[in-house]
Length: 277
Image (cartoon, rainbow, N blue to C red; front, side):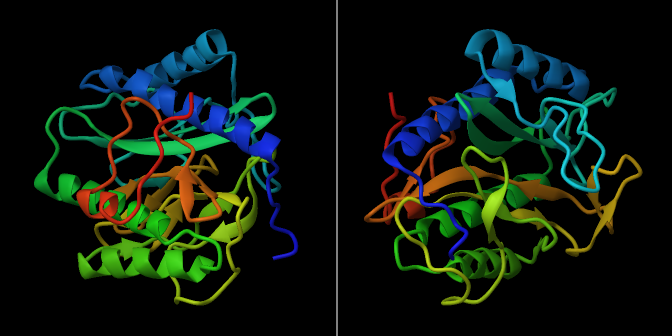
């Protein structure tokens, strides 16, 4: 746990602002996600909104971890069987498609990171259920967050819920610590055993972002070096929030006016604060 940073009050204030701005990009883009739009157009709109309206920086643009080529766009658009890191381009969205839009912005040096599933026109029953179960998985994981709990508690509850529904959990990608750095410790696995891995402490900030497949959990990487798809071409879904460990539990930092509310069973067990002004 030595290398997991504990954020200061000033850091937390900065992260609240960054989290809110990231979520507001998703609020802004929602009306544009409809049949006939290209993923490249969604990227252009989000990029413009971040830079011109928010005065924020799109973190993915030219992001280049070791062994990768720079990511060429401002957002990730992962359509249907794309698990994550889909590069926006010429793809035209059609009725029945599902797309995860993943936004990370930088404001005053702090990163806000969040993603949502969007339905293009009328989704299939399978797509709707997969998205719903994945959303519940994320919130079940978040609800486990409090000082003294373990990272393994988060992964366990997500894996149980997904597999009980007949789905599988992608293991190659996970949530991550975040702050002035885009990806830092800890790694937040979406599978595991309770009572294992690092113990949580107030002041930690990390993402919970389960990727759940309708079919098997195996993945394949596309030739662009970024796009990840399900190996069996089954649908995949993902939701993501950035969360602060508080003295008594958790605070979701990626909140905005149009953010979907937590599932009813979560609202009964854990209150999430309203968006910080």
